[in-house]
Image (cartoon, rainbow, N blue to C red; front, side):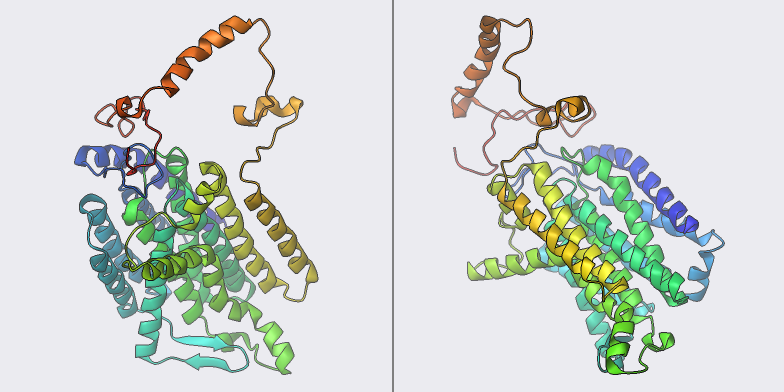
Amino acid sequence: MRDYLLTLCVTAAVTYLLTGPVRKFAIATGAMPEIRARDVHREPTPRLGGIAMFFGLCTGLLVADHLQNLNSVFELSNEPRALLSGAALIWLIGVLDDKFELDALIKLGAQMISAGVMVMQGLTILWLPIPGVGTVALTKGQGTLLTVALVVLTINAVNFVDGLDGLAAGMVCIAAAAFFLYAYRLWYGYTIEAAAPATLFAAILMGMCLGFLPHNMHPARIFMGDSGSMLIGLILAASAISITGQVDPDVLKLFEGSTREATHAALPVFIPLVLPLTIIAIPMADLILAIVRRTWNGQSPFAADRGHLHHRLLEIGHSHSRAVLIMYFWSALIAFGTLAYSVHSTSMWIVLVVVFLSAIGLVLLLLPRFTPRAPHWAESFVPPRYRRRRAGRPGMRRGSRSKAAAPVAMAVEEPAEERVPVPAGVNGATAIGHRSRFTDRRKAGTPS
């Protein structure tokens, strides 16, 4: 565990330190696309954050290769090299897309090729544990098709959810944390060496997301772009493929005794079939709903719109930060709830806790405009928006308050055609200087 934590911390540090220079590089190369109608942010923001994340991945693998307890992962398995090969290809395509806006079919083809590269180097699904049947061996063609399908679905699910500041990185970090705990338990508790690569991939993925999040939280100074979202989606899929198709359930000798006892004992092995889906349940649901919605409206499934789950949270009145936290909450509830059930499947307390937390999540969804207020003794420790409002500050006269508010009222009454947004140039929001401010608060792309 100490070596995994060291790898995680080094990966996070490298990603965090490189994100600043990458931001300057993105500004210099003009990787700042114009604001589109579906975008939520108001100011042009540089992309290419995936560059820092990719170098964090390389550093994490390099550090792990030189650690005594993790070096065996590289000696006994070719999966780390397979992951690095596929990640380099999908990252390169993502960098080109962040700069030149590639066609969706080109990116889809690149995703399939990246998955094929990993399959050729051994990172593929070899068998599936099926309850009541046992271990079902897959042919080479079946394993390849299933691996490619899982990689493509996971990449696009993560890419679809990357619509708010810090949303994709945070949700993938939560997913990686749940998967790390499961894989580490399978490796350490059952002494299965085949689970070690998936544990390492999950630890590195957590480090990449944690290192990038401080730069990407609202208001974001840089976006990960497709170079980052497709990269972390591929690593998440590779972790699931490694532990699902490489760990042989027969090694655990769980399919013995009665059918009921064997089923309960084999739950830690069956969970890999479900855990990857529960980890990306929210992004996958968003992906399926987007495809159905666009097809129903006669549009291409790859056409972008503002109908995603995070957009709907904003439309019903949630703030940007609260919408992100709600998505975090549901992702953690599903992922860690499934993880807890895999450990104690017969405990009713787990079901009751999940139901209770689900009720809390539903209440949060139904109260979009509710702002909690901190008690008086805690007001100095919370942001100003959570402090109780006072009738007036001591020593302030009513006349001075009205005079101070006059310029604000005049600014609100300013005609729409005169409110021109300040372009983000060398000294704009995407550069090193002060952040430029848009006085026009209408949605991007809406008519005047």
